[in-house]
Amino acid sequence: MKSVAQSTVLPADSHARRDFLAAGAAASAALAAGIAPSVWAQAAAIRAVMPNVFMPEAARPVIAEQTGGVKVDNLPYVSPTDTLAKLMAPGGTAQYDMMITLTNFVRGPAMGERAGQEKILALDLSVISNASKISAAHKDEIITRDGKTFTLPVVWGYESVVYDASKIAPDDALTQSWNLLFADKYRGKIAWRDDAHGMIFTAALAMGIANPLTMDEKQIREVGKWLVDRKKNVRTMWTKFAEAVNLIASGEVHCMYGWIAMRAALEKQGVKAANNWPREGLPTWTQSAFIPKDSKAAATTQRVINAMLSRDFGRRLTEITEYPSTSQEVADGYSAEYRSKVGFDIADRGVKRVPFNLPMRMDLWVETWNTVKAA
Image (cartoon, rainbow, N blue to C red; front, side):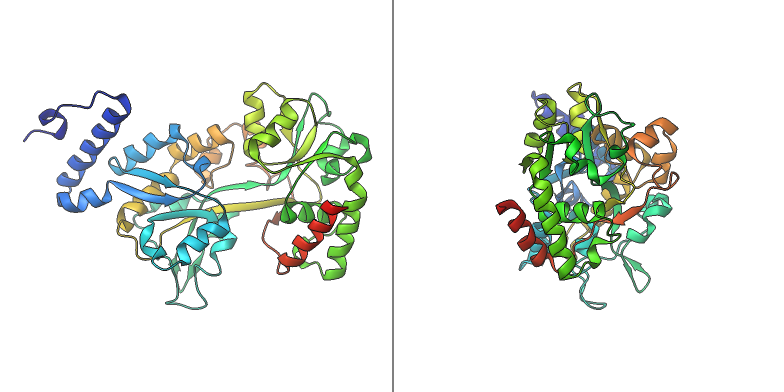
């Protein structure tokens, strides 16, 4: 019996040829396993809604290698709120095969109030064997009900201050505090993010409030007043990734509220970028994978999730984006120096983690932030 590649003329375009060969490999693997061609055709690609950064091009071959050539088609990702809106919309549970978004957004609407109301499928951990390698620090981010597992965290991260270490000395005590974003010392060289959640959360930590999520209305208003006072030290506020990176790369500011991937992007431009480890608390989050309950490619998607939790995929994800994999196996494979840089060792060195969840009164946070901006 001839293979697909032997019996057909290959496409001339290199990308098309690569996809064609991957499809051929997937077909051969499916036939060898006794899977009918019609079933294989449905499973050759899955439709995924997730941040593109979590599926780097250089990591895609790992998915293909470990799943027999399955292709992940990334659909537009806007935000966690939009992702849940897609899932909850009429017919939404059948339009997508995999979603990855902030774990805390999934615990409510996606799971429903009780068993049987879930909008997502229970996962088969005999297929997703790499789930056993999720680190102890992230086990509590796995969403379960009645002994069944519904989501698995694949990547984690944190909010921090990103700064130019050639302009701000790493041994400056402020680099170990959220007050780096608010101090008079760096007046005019600070950038905030135009975001109510992040700025009020971190300002509260800087003020000594241990858990910003528990703030009452009076405390929220006090944080707002403090931000108005500190606003005099701010050069600008950013809204887009590229805009934020350019602020430091150009020298316009020396520090800003930032994301891990911004540090990585600045390093690629030759900037001596670093992030701080604030003693008041490091807001951390995970992004979890799950399958809408009416997906027609659920079996294939579970193999993709397993591949994303593998050592090979996790290493490429971490090294390309510097967002850490949730796999303990990935973390254990790095030097102490790299583990420290990326943040794998935050538990070992005693950094206090604060779950970066949404407050109950987000409306009040937004109202307060709008007052700060208008001041």
